[in-house]
Amino acid sequence: MRPPYALRRTPWTAAGVAVAVACGGGGCGADDEFANEERSPAPLTLSASITRTDVTVSPSRLGAGTIELIASNLTSTSQRLTLRSRALSGGVAPLEQRTGPINPGDTASLTADLAQGTYRVTTGSRAIAPATIRVGPRRRSAQDQLLQP
Image (cartoon, rainbow, N blue to C red; front, side, top):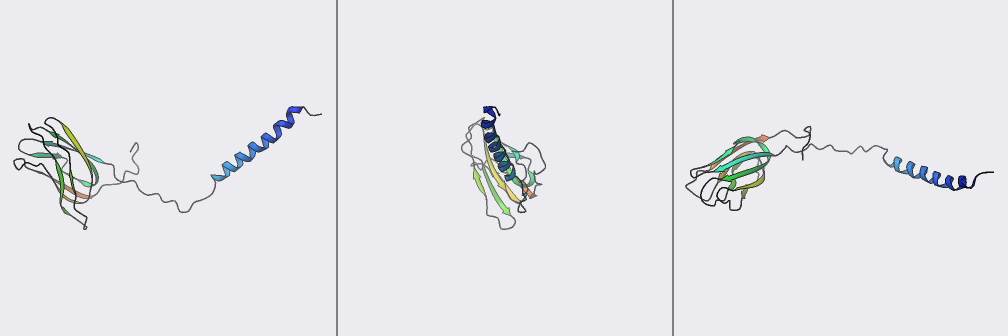
């Protein structure tokens, strides 16, 4: 004679095995249409400083891709920074982005996806000379770089 608990365990064991097989089987198979798209280039951070005489940007030569421009205002008046494309290759639409007012001693940032071409970084003041950024061909993919966002 069987113990009474053996009858109760058998249906649950069978149900558990059925669920495990169903879940495990769903992960099997081939998908021939998997596309391993390359990751875009890692974003670059550019530093800009606004002084009484000019705007400086570092680095001023780079490859095309996403940038974050962090600007510090070293003047005694509030300034706005404008990033504007001058001549772009391949018929790309012109780019123009502005920061909000940057108070004296404060910083601001803007993010842009730069195409190959030449860009100017200006302020609203004619007394402050603009900076030029030259953008070359697209940077390498960040596909094999670890710890990327």
